[in-house]
Image (tube, rainbow, N blue to C red; front, side, top):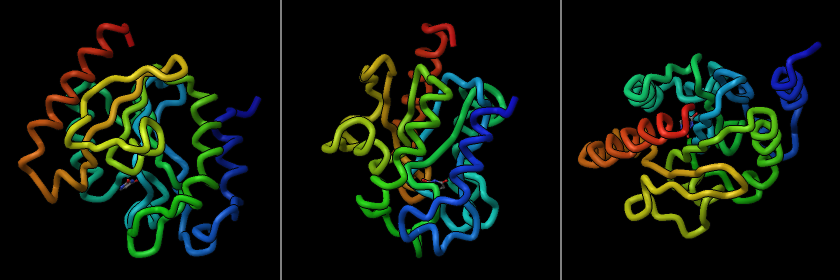
Amino acid sequence: MTDPMQQLQTQCASCQNCPLGATRTNLVFGVGDPAAKLLFVGEGPGEQEDLQGEPFVGKSGQLLDRYLALIGRPRDGGVYIANIVKCRPPHNRDPKPEESEQCLPWLRAQVRILRPKIIVCLGRIAAQRLIDPEFRVTRMHGVFTEKGGILFMGTFHPAALLRNPAQKKDALADFQALRDKLEELGI
Ligand code: URA
């Protein structure tokens, strides 16, 4: 029997639902453990991700990996990583609302397969899409909100932390709270 996530990825690979499909080098579908109950969602692929076909493999990905190590979840163990849009927006601009809208059914299908207990939104774009259109990371980071049986939390995007290292202590606190929540829920 074919793995459902693999099957979904194969379908997604031919997606041309928005103009980003025409300019991508590679689809960046998502990576991780298909049995993960913890899902991280970023904004969209950057240059390195587009070239390698994997989310968070550039500089911000290296920082994310450090935070994942802190919670004892390497990217191939107990965690899945995806993005709001699966193709790189040119020049790393924010995804347009209509691009996110066109791409979201793929993420929703991934969520249906994974059935995560916790979704962590990395940065404003993901948090505003998945948690609250008015989400402000500096004010609302680290707070768990339940929606449809899933706990959502928004935190700083690793690229923002590289630009503004003063926020790393708040990000660290969010990941410590996440580690506690995982333990509390026995995930
Ligand atoms: N930034 C994101 O939001 N996602 C990636 O995959 C890489 C960088």
